[in-house]
Image 1 (tube, rainbow, N blue to C red):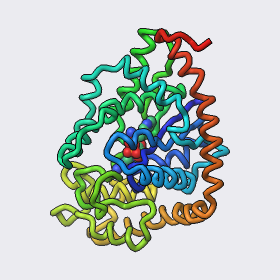
Image 2 (tube, rainbow, N blue to C red; image 1 turned 180 degrees about the horizontal axis):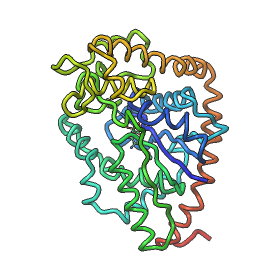
Image 3 (tube, rainbow, N blue to C red; image 1 turned 120 degrees about the vertical axis):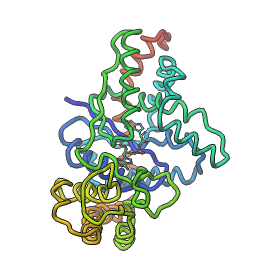
Image 4 (cartoon, protein in one colour; image 1 turned 135 degrees about the vertical axis):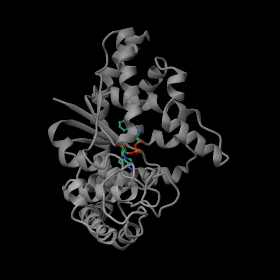
Length: 332
Ligand code: TYM
């Protein structure tokens, strides 16, 4: 059976980008067609300056939101990365097959280390080695497919390279994974700056729709979205990034292609209004279920505990095999 693995990092409140780019596919398709694991990657949240209580809170919230979005613990495994030691164990081994240059070339490293610098903060070493941990997340499970948004392309490529290299040097141990992307909304852009990704770790919330935003807040953010200087509604990501972003969001919510949608609108106003309502409707059931789950924290804890047990059992044999293959003496 196909093995799927993907994850979300608890560095901020989950956004519409996370939902349309990744989570919605996990719930509607991936968990039903494969042996799928979905992980709240809390170790990754420690790679930039953080507040311990906030990371704990966001980890619990992300788990609750994944379940509220429709991940079903009967169909898939939902767990927290730090609950399964195999991730950190394997990450170190992969650091021993990766190179320093390879890590420094990662676009996200360049962007995030520059951002830490402009805030007067030093760059944590773990930010540089982040892709080795991400590769460990994926490779520990013999993952075939990694459903992600397109900002993760380079990281998944590096995971592939590390799997191939490890296999060549030490014998076939890992499956070589491949990334899969959604047809539309693979990169939802910030509503105030449609040339940048809608990202949960950014500070200005005005261009970011959060999954837990109240309907009126969603409407306000979408209605105030920056559009382009033209008047006509055209789908062209390069020349018309603002309008194209709205068309993609509406397309992801409605199922109609962005090109087809563009011909049915004469004004930006009408497009914004329909997009706002479509987003409100997509988020409504998630928010409703989230309220129910918040009232039952013991259920979420149970899911995470049994998820971690299943994940541990799934990862351990391959990580043990990697230990042996690379030259470490097995413990008795
Ligand atoms: P993270 O937490 O930034 O994002 C989680 C998922 O949401 C997607 N995504 C988007 N998709 C479309 N438009 C956007 N604006 C947008 N913003 C985020 C991301 O592509 C991702 O699929 N490094 C990963 C977490 C990770 C991981 C893994 C993922 C750690 N280990 C192993 C897959 C497999 C990250 O920071 O995702």
